[in-house]
Length: 179
Image 1 (cartoon, rainbow, N blue to C red):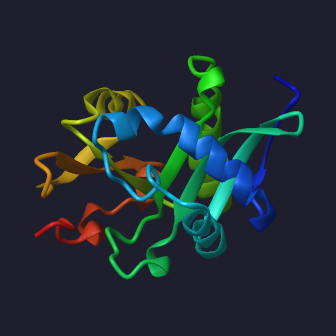
Image 2 (image 1 turned 45 degrees about the vertical axis):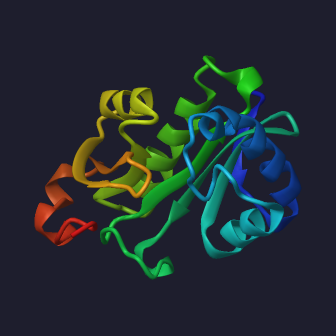
């Protein structure tokens, strides 16, 4: 595993990330999931890189996984005061090798908890159209704190994971984001 490198993505990575996400999210498109990341064009990928902090995991010089951290002040629709992780994808040829877990753990622990001292992290997922993903996040320590019915009959959930228990204050999450 010593050939793996994690770094912050640059705008010049946009085309590679666009291709990676297109490949990784093909099964989600086939399930009818219509998240921005699932159907992102190159301009949307570039915009994500400019406005947020995107990490990539490389095997040598090949980008094989990515995840983006959106900070509360970077969104007009704030879900909580804690960072939100999204646009999480791994090249399908690396599925089942723990690559995505390695990158998510780095972002949760090294970047958010140890570097930024963030008490918690949030994410959103589908509970009906993509039910196995919900269970994966639960196994990683995430818990549902808000849910909503979407226009297409899906159940959207917002999850959180406490990273620093003695600094976490549930009250600062405020009202669920979908009221």
